[in-house]
Amino acid sequence: MEPPVPRFIEAHGARIPLVGLGTWDLRGRTCARIVEQALRLGYRHIDTAQLYENEREVGEGLRASGVRRDDVFLVTKIWPSHFSPPELERAARDRLVWLRVPDVDLLLLHWPNPRIPLAETIGALCKVKREGLTRHIGVSNFTVAMLDEANALTTEPLVCNQVECHPFLDQSKVLAACRRHGMAMVAYSPIARGEAKGDPVLARIGRAHRKSAAQVCLRYLVQQGIAVIPRTSKLDRLVENAAIFDFVLSETEMAEIAALARPDGRVVNYAYSGAPSWD
Ligand SMILES: NC(=O)c1ccc[n+]([C@@H]2O[C@H](COP(=O)([O-])OP(=O)(O)OC[C@H]3O[C@@H](n4cnc5c(N)ncnc54)[C@H](OP(=O)(O)O)[C@@H]3O)[C@@H](O)[C@H]2O)c1
Image (cartoon, rainbow, N blue to C red; front, side):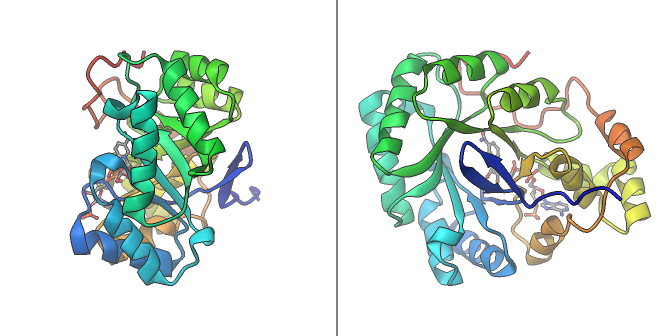
C-alpha cells in the first residue's frame, strides 16, 4: 500500500494546499459564486491575479463563504508592467484594496520582465513582504536559470514557482530546480485547459479507478507533490476536481501518463514580450 499523499506542500514555512481553485477568466457574479461554493466545499487555496480583474469578486466570495480568512491560502500576482520598485509597492497595496484583506498568503511575480533588473523587482517584493502585505512571496513562469538568479538575489525565501504543468508538457527540469531551492511547484492549466478530458490514455486509466480523465490528470500531478489550481465555473466539476485523494496511480500508470508529453504540448502561449524561452 502506497503512503497517502499529504494534502499540503510545505515550502520555507508556507503550507500550500495541494488543490486550489484557479480563477482566470471568471468574472462578476460567476466568480464570486464559484469562490464561495469552492470554499464551502472545502477548498482552502484560491488563485487570482491583478491581470484577471476579478480580485474584488474573489474577496466577495471569500467573505460570503463564512470561512475564516486565516483558513484560506490566498494567492495573487503582480503584472510585469508594474515591476519597478515604486510601482510594485503600489500594485501590492492595490491588490489588498481590491480583495479587501489586510494581507495575502502569497504574492507572485506573474511573468519575468527582462526590461527591469530582477534585483530591483525582487528587492521590492522582499520589502512588501517585510512590511506585512503578504505572508510569502514567489514567482511564476520562471525558467531554471531565472530561478537560480532569483534565489541568489532574494533576502526572503521564494516559496513557489507557478508554471504551466500537465501531462502533455514535460516540466521535470523546472520541478527539479524548484526542489533544489526548497520551492513548491504549482501547476497552472493543470488539465491543459480541458484537453485532458478527451485524452484516451487518461480516460482508460480513469475507468480502471472509476475516475474521470481530468481526475487522473490532477492525481498524476499531486502524486508527485505538485500543487494544482484547476479552474471551473461549474459546481459539479469543483467536486470532481477535488476528489483525487482516494486512489493511487501505479508506477506503470504514472510512466504511461508521463509519456504523453510532447514538444508542442504547451497550451498557454502569451509569454510576456521579451521573456526568454523555457528551454
Ligand atoms: N501564472 C500564470 O501565468 C497562469 C497562466 C494561466 C493560468 N493560471 C492560473 O491557473 C488556473 C488554471 O488554469 P487554466 O484556467 O488556464 O486551465 P485549466 O484549469 O487547466 O482548465 C480550465 C478549463 O477546463 C475546464 N474544466 C475544469 N474542470 C474540468 C473537468 N473536471 N473536466 C473537464 N473540463 C474541466 C473548464 O471549463 P468549465 O469552467 O466549463 O468547467 C475550463 O474551460 C487559472 O484559472 C489561473 O488561476 C496562471
